[in-house]
Length: 312
Image (tube, rainbow, N blue to C red; front, top):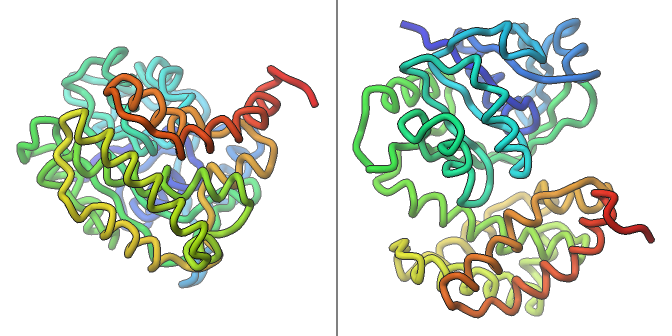
């Protein structure tokens, strides 16, 4: 039986993966707002990628009460919006509904669980270089498009298997990791390791990885996060940093992170959930994180300006 899936937050990740599901016949409702919502309703959701352009006709609304109970809610909002999203999606949560957060970082699941209950929430993450470039339009570059999710006890469940089947049918690279916490921290190490530096330097990943000076900083940031993970009893393998650096080497040269793009555009960013979280979690675990702390403090004035806290 086809799952009913709601995408709460139709940005780059939510729009891309939701579009793939809808294209394969899954019943998808997009939660969006403003001009983006109007464009989706009038013209469908347009996704431009290296493989061409697709236009998906699907239900879209800004009111979860119109949707009612669904099987799955995929959360695609920014990290600082997760708690508000948890309250907003309550009308879509039935007894068997489960929620999959796609946020970067390692704190979204616990934030959702505080509002809707731990039993309703899986751990989740994704990888994609996708963003909204015009109302109703998503642009996606490169081949880095994957999604991972799983139960916090790392047991294979009927609900996680069902969602995996839906993504497989949509032709999306999908995985239920053996340890979802390890997977979350590996992604955290990846994005925070080079994303903050990209925002400081305004340089794309191809430049950052090619210059010995900036490559050394990326690897140093990753090693700090690795140390915080181990101190937090997350059992990353010894070769995690080396494997992640190799992964960074596979990115399209012009790729930038959402943190980088938001900082450059003068928008609120996920700084607190990326390098800021490294600093906070490092302090909690008693692990020094000087590189991540420098990046966090360097970007903080721009972040506070974007949020209207300081002016310059």
